[in-house]
Length: 104
Image (cartoon, rainbow, N blue to C red; front, side, top):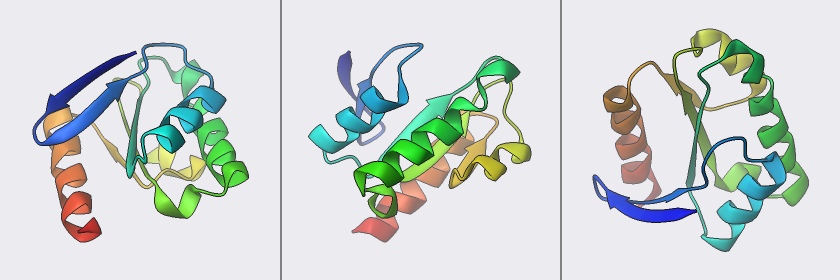
């Protein structure tokens, strides 16, 4: 796990192949407002739903926005319950900055 600051955000990079439970635990421990997930292969897309389910189970789904991106991502991922998707990091950052402005 790495903690960095980027574009005005505190980013906690959990790495690759992280179980949904660990993502939610890190979100709780760090009072995260936004979770960003990435998928490079279409076989990993259903994992987005697992993260959403774990957020609901933890009772924090309404407190956390979820954005996803990566080579395998398109608008179809919205069916998994994520709040937004982005094809590029720059576009994803725009969405996150908008959300951050709304959360203040």
